[in-house]
Image (cartoon, rainbow, N blue to C red):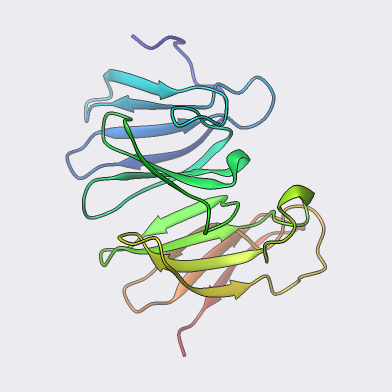
Length: 189
């Protein structure tokens, strides 16, 4: 079984095409900062990660997505990066160009959408980034577009924390603050 037999502040869940279930865990004090993998029946397979900034560590793995090559993308928010691993948690790459992501989504064409809800407002050390939704390639890592925070003077967790896109290219950002929170739709023009 798992090192610890209960979840501690899980952030996201992703079901792979083969049915494997990945849960990212770690949000705040006492966080375990790990990914737990289960089979389609919910039986524990393995866990990987741990707290830190190394290749095999996380700091607040906040969101999960998978590309067409079955690579797992982790929005490693506390480390201001995307960490890419294989299905067994082995390190492939780390990308910093998408900024401090709270949410990540990859569509069927390997277009990556990343929601940065905290740069400049929660993490001053990451203040040089413009908060918003970055769009780019999960294949190459190239960032091709930015939807900036519509309220750039906001303090706290602002703009989209979660992100998804539909097949027509419309982007939906789940905003958790400031109150009351909302779902914002961005239409391709």
